[in-house]
Amino acid sequence: MLRPEAVDAPLHLTPLELGTGRAASSSAPDGTTHWRLSLSASSQYADAQLDDYHELARRALPWSPPVRLSLSARTSTRYPSGTFGFGFWNDPFSFGFGARGAGRRFPQAPQTAWFFYASPPSDMRLHHDVPGAGWKTATLRSRPLHPALLLPGAAGAFLGMQIPPLRRGLFGLMRRFYHAEESRLHFDPSQWHSYVVDWRMDRVVFLMDGEIQAVSAEPPEVPLGLVIWIDNQFAVASPEKGMRFGVIPLDEPQWLEVADLRIAKGERSPAKSA
Image 1 (cartoon, rainbow, N blue to C red):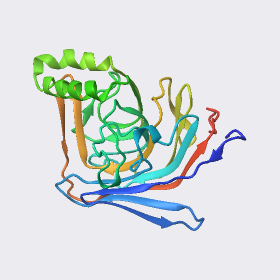
Image 2: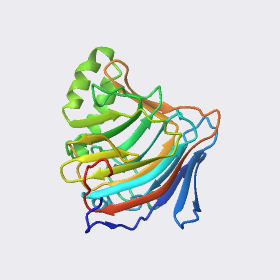
Image 3: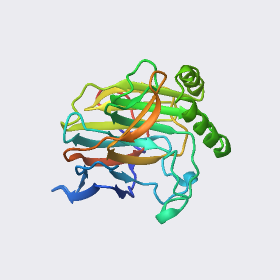
């Protein structure tokens, strides 16, 4: 159970709707807010998202450990097309620079602690023992790099990964700049489940329906923001297939529903009843 000093923290979520993405809220009988993030059929990029960092500078992102995110969620289908997830990250490649109220943030090396799903053709081989697509827990801790080095380095890596003889060597070099820990999940996300991301100073504990699914000993760098989303993009980054990004056309609507959303400041025991 939560320690006595742990308290619920206020949430300041902002919907983001791109393309056919829509974020709709409703009130449950107990007074809590129920969210449906939905995408209509489309051949263009679409994203429905909730976050609490859109208008903040990167140094002002609100979350650092110890903090515990809990929610219940389900999807419209067991295998959505694109990606969805929920947890903490630093919105690493935001290019808003203050446009339309966005915080002025230069790109930064990625940091994440979240539940994450990606459908084929996504194939992001961040961890050599875990498939590049599917439903998983994931943490990513990258070495801090100044934007003056990060942007040219990322552009060079992207171009180099288009050349098959260079891919394996480049991919090995890229892995020297981050530490990823991932664990596959075998639960059907279209059924209601409860999820917890328990982010501590020395580790991140992931729970589903009260059972520990993974423990990462490499928590991300701070600070981070909260994000909950569903979209129809894909990303490939593997020594066999190179690096590319794109959009998966949607022939029918799909959605992610979220309820019982809470954030509590304070640590938590990793016991089974957590």
